[in-house]
Image 1 (cartoon, rainbow, N blue to C red):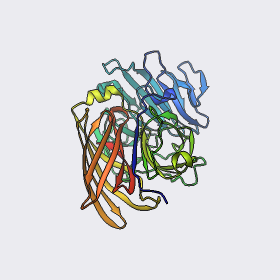
Image 2: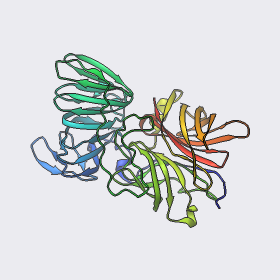
Image 3: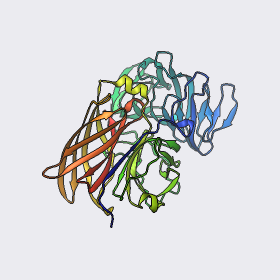
Image 4: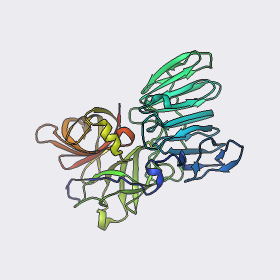
Length: 430
């Protein structure tokens, strides 16, 4: 019988095992690196020279990526991701990023055909005019966001988070989180659409038996972008379980390996089993797993939230401001014998950035068929935070959390209810 000793573990990894984990600095650096490629994906240079793209290969300015019947995910040096659908052509027209947002950074791209999903990075965040995706039908500008484009004779797309501006010769349209757009042609003004443009995600490739694919929609029923943390990474990590003793610890970093579908396979050099991925959007991933080393880890279920570290420059620029986060996913609530006893129904998170500044959360659950709610409060320290609160009578909740990704766009927490029930939650900044 497992003892109900609730432990929280917060480990920060601010370096990368592979160069893809963090932005690369310097004008001489190639704009992007291939996270993964499936099928006959090629890059064609300005002079017509063609080469095959595979994982780890650099993509240069002026090259056109052609997915043919395959697909590819690119990670840019400013932290942006671009995932290209089959039969897509995407060109890097002009790109420059030296680690500074001083107006010299540029990201100009052309989608010649096909579809893409993207999470934008530092380029264009402060200087909006320095980022554009061009098609013959319309031009896409950003306000710091995640979005999709499906381009043929017309354009459709959906904004997952943030805001974009879609413009052509007939006018411009601002599209915000959860909204979709449609552009019939160059001479027709862009309009909002009721149809979500959710591009199909790649099929799973031999996932673990316990893996539940959830990359079409998130917990709110909104379209997922199909991006994923891929490969060996050193990531910020928050975890908890009901083991007798301290949960996995590595000191200064949390090495993790994800397969090409974004499924966790290895943690701290140990293979994991019974993986249940709650989600993985390329910035944050969450779920549960067990390890194959019971003597070290107890063989118990571990709830986790992990993601790209927040850069110190981002935290400095956000200092004193407040971010509001909405729930995008959660693990089931389990008890001391790893049995599911409930679920997180809703949650919001508010973070005032900066050391020792206030953090608060409002959460509701259904536990053993009955409603439960709590208001938590606490403070942060850099990219991590701790919360606690009362859920009625002698009921208490404690949560350990972290901020993730460029501009702290994501947040995650692992919480304990009455030191006997555990869950994890992932959030996106509104």
